[in-house]
Picture 1: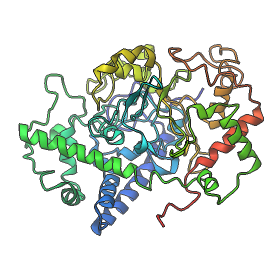
Picture 2: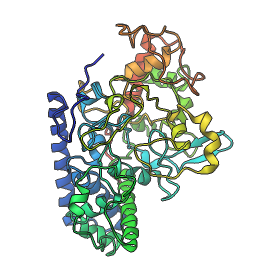
Picture 3: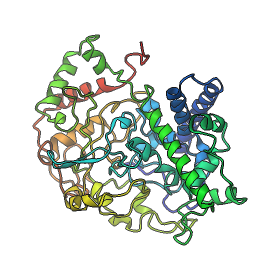
Length: 477
C-alpha cells in the first residue's frame, strides 16, 4: 500500500501537508498552467473574428485562471490537464491520495478528478423508460444535470469555484468579482454584454472573497449585493460556465484524433494485438455493454452515459476519510470519517450531503434512489491511457483505487473469481481483492468472472491505448 502524500493533521491553507515530491510535481503543473494562461491571454489580444471561437477562448482563459480560487492558487485545469486526457496531472497524487487538494491545500475531495474530455457531449440528464435508467449529466454522481442551462458540462463548471475542497470561494459572486478584474473582462463584455460586470461591488469584497468557504448558514451569500446586482452576478456566473462548457466542446478537448479514429477512417490498420483486444472488448470481455463504441448515427464515445457500481474497493489512501475534524477555518469535510461510504447517484437523488450542489433534484426521480445507490457514472474510455511519459501514474475508478489500466482490466476479469484479501495481504490486486466499498446495485452481469487469460487482459489494454488522442491532427480541413 502506498504511503499517502498528505499529513491528515496539518491545518491551514499552505503546502506543508504535502510531500516534497507532490509539491515539486504540483509546482510543475502550476507552471504549465501559467504558461497556457499567458498564451491564451496573448491570443485574446487579437481575438478570432467569430463569436463561437471567442467564447471557446474565453472558456479556456477561465479554465486556466488561478485567480478564481480563494487563495489564487488553483485553476480548474489543476485537476484537468491536456497531457493526461484532461484528468489528474500529478503522478504522485495519483499514486497516493487519488483525490486532489483544493485551494486550501489541506482539504481533499472524496473522488479522483473525472476526465472532462468529451464531457460536453453528455446529454442533459434524463430518465429513459425503455432502459429504465437515468442517462446523461456530468460528475461521477450525475449531479450536474444540465437541465437548468441545457448543458451538463456548463453546470458541472459551476461546481468547483465554491466547492470548499476545490477552489473554495465562499460565494459564486466572488468568482464574478475576481473575473471582473482579469485581463479578459473586456472580451467577456463584448461577447456577453456590457452588463456582465456592471455590479456595485461592496468595499469589503476582497476581504470576503479571501476567506475560504463554505459560508455560514446565517449568511449564505456573504458578498452582500443588491437584489438586482445579485441577479446580474448569477447570470454572469452562468455565462462564465457556458464559456467553459463551450471550450470543453471545442476541438482542443473533443477532437476524435486517436489511432482508433484513424483506423475507422481507413488511415491505419490495427496491429494483431490491437485487433484481438478490440474483438475481446466487443465480445468475451463485454466492455462494449457500457463503454459503447457507437452505433448508427452515434459517435464512438466509449460510454453509454449511464451509471454502474462495478464494486470498486474503498480507497484507504483518500485523505477524505481523515477530514472528520474542523480544520483551521472550522470546516469539517467528512463528518462520517472512516465510516463514509460513497453512494454515488443515489446520494444525489436522495438529497444527501454533496460538496457542491449545482443542479436541483427532480422530485419525480426520488423513487429511483434505491436503484441508484452505489452507482457512479460510466466514464469514457477515450484517453484512458493518455499520459505525458511511460512512467507517469494515472488513477482509475471513482476513488482512484486503481493505479494502472492492467489492474483495472484484471479487476473486471477476476473480481468474483479471486478470494477476498486479508488485512495487508501482499497479493492485493493480483491474487485477491478487497471487499467492494458497497455491494448495493453492484454490476454482476458484465464483469467479475470473465475467464480472460493474462494475455487477453494485455490485448484489451493494447486496444484501449489506441483511444489516446493526438495520433491525427485536429485541424478542420
